[in-house]
Image (cartoon, rainbow, N blue to C red; front, top):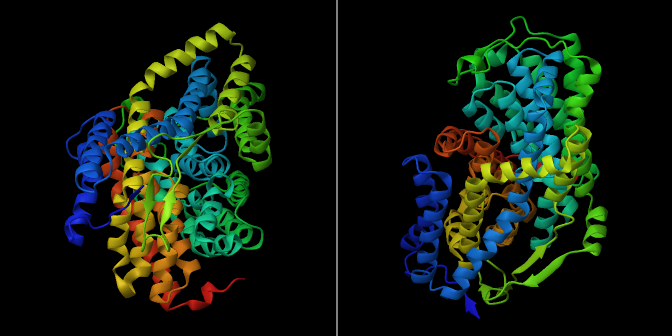
Length: 549
């Protein structure tokens, strides 16, 4: 049994700097040295192994095992999801269905700003609520690039849009996990997050369009943005406070899509924005005006059918009862060698010494990616593919994504080493020493957790206990700070490395991950700071918002 050492140098500053080395190496390689994502991830992984073994005294066998464990979790479920989403995209593109789909959106609106709002924010929120784990960015990024958006716009704006729904993603999984690790009431946590995020659900759509076309361009379509935002934020608040975390995003996203579509039938902006470039560089063909399609209703239905099938199966695969039934048919669970129950989390990160489990669940039937794979196969057959042709397209997709899958596996390997070595907790403790400013910095701790792990669920598991313990020591409401971990975390989603790789892959902009990171970083930190300020106001100025309503 090896116990975490959070200050190996007996100097908090030096230990914190050492813990930050792997993340700094990977992000610097991406953002400043323009190194390909899979190479940057492998460099970060190598530095994480060195720091874990030689600085934090983690046994080499456990360090290497945790890397392998993380890589396995990177490929299943995240890699499995992106592979099958892009497979479906390839199937529809080769048959010409994707072109019909993208042109059919012009039947709702030819304005690029409103297409972005409908696809990236409203439609993407549905996939976040139903599946999570990179699904919304993969789907909306592919759709936006098909609509003619510049690669950076399609990638970066998909990441910005995929923020407000993240805390309740995958049928409430992040909140359920947070309740599990903190012992706090799940409905209280759901309600608290539901009183924090609607403010930002109102803000993010305006921010999204502003980022695309500037303030004046945003101001020209503010009524439509307000409808999309309010149609999402109001159900988000009501469902989270009076029902629970399970259907928050799905209900809010459907409300936003339906009401925005209906509103656009009766309202049009004074000037139609026809350029898909916005403030971004684009190829000439991407700057052409969006023309209303002439496809028949039957052709449009056929084009949307694969994505309807995908939506239904992703939602079905997210239902706990359905997952439980599939796991009852087949699931492989085994203790990960040289890691399971061999590392121990220590106070003050945990209230008491806590032995870390490492059980790998190969839930190949109940994984969201399997639902997407089945949807893709059904859609392929409906589109007229033969089985041999389906496997040829799948093999081509695998070849296209080989570097992206390596990057995702390496990034998760890095994240798991930082978790099992205690390096992430060392970084977290630096935030916990901020005293009266903790509501602000505790929120940023959640942001950092998602940026490190790529998952709001994982960040809640990682720092939920620390948030509760620190809040109690400082006399703050533990439900508030545990919820702030989740709410602040959503803004870290746009800069986590695996999401950036997914975005680059979905938009076929391979090798430009550093440009995407540089673009979204300001948006991420600015929005995270705003969440931190809001939580600080809740803690000290507006305590009535802490009440259970």
